[in-house]
Image (cartoon, rainbow, N blue to C red):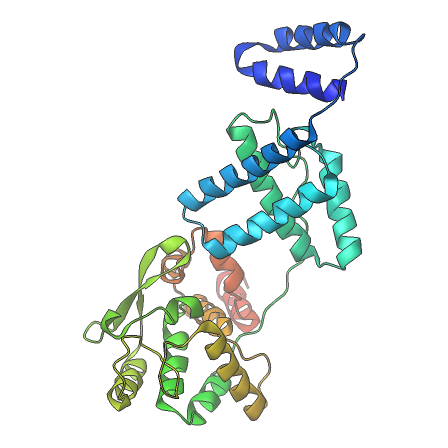
Length: 327
């Protein structure tokens, strides 16, 4: 307890002292407090922990993080604090390592999940460090968890045509074409309204992660199918895609996922879901020679590394390129 108090005092004085002075202050405090008994106020500490988390979440909210992400951040950080039962200023690297190890063993979590937790905790403690609440982040020496590279599946041309040919509703055909030709996220698609679509330019503006706007483009086939679907509608809902049954409410992400899953099951296709269209477009674009920077802009990725994770270059083209440039 005395050591924690000394650490807190020295930390508060860091902006005003050099290294030698900080070390001397530690020595003096150790000697001066040696004859005293020190206890902590638990109630004050709990309030302080909550304040740190809320301040961090406020900072992330200003940066443009979605409420869904903020909810995940809060749950992850508070679970760690509750498990360790320590003031965040007193948490050290071994505490975080032991917490991650115990969490993985207890929940049977994948390496991806553990790395996501590590990344959130790293962001939290780095923010505390930047704001001078702590001297150094305890997660700084805990490196990214190696998860291996899994080549994720994309739709074949045959699978896409099979889905199109077996669409029983104009809405579903337009929806599949919209996802396949734009590469937009399903969450972006369900937020679109009719007047967001520019049919002359074959483009529309979507709101991506962090409420960032970007332009996406669709092909001639999508234009025709989308126009046919809108002309067939009798409702006055401004949403681009609505439910098939009255009162024709805006289609939600879950509704799109369920509908696509039904098509996959009926047609004998594996893992049919909205995000797979996005990955398919990215792979096809790279495969046909689209510059990665342009694909990054099209998909709305902040980091180009994210774009490269989506784009799985076909092995057959690697072989052709090798013969062309090397062999």
